Image 1: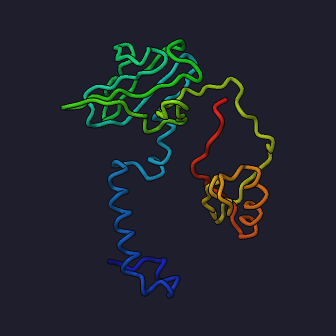
Image 2: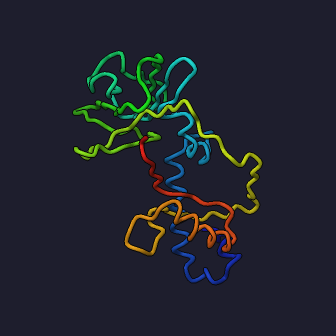
Length: 215
């Protein structure tokens, strides 16, 4: 295998070249599985812009990728969690399923899942591209939630211009960012972690497992 540029630029990595090459080969094999011909990994990463539940000017559209499914239904508060043909998805090309619904078909804060059928069985599933998932306090069951606020967030800083050359990303988990045995808060993260991130020269943060109160 041709030596990677990262090995050539950093001789300290030479003793680990075999392991690094192995990881890179694995990355390439996974990339081939995720992207189809004519697409890029970036296209796959922005799939949420196409798949999942989206609000339209005159209703809703929902899409899911399920190549082995034989039928898919949206079930939720809006249809008493029942398998109904008016909430059945249509199969398109390349394993894509879609349904378009009128405005009144679902409403803000309602819960929903997919009822997926396949050869030999069926089951309820949370959509892969669900943008919001909540847990019932009593049953502890997770469900996707329709989130369509009529007052979108307005950014206070309208002149912000990110520095992306080079883009230096700091991956973080706000709830786990405290050295104390507790779930850290956004305010604590702002005061104790962000200054250290900035001093380290990073210009971007990638936040994992964002949680918010449902109301």
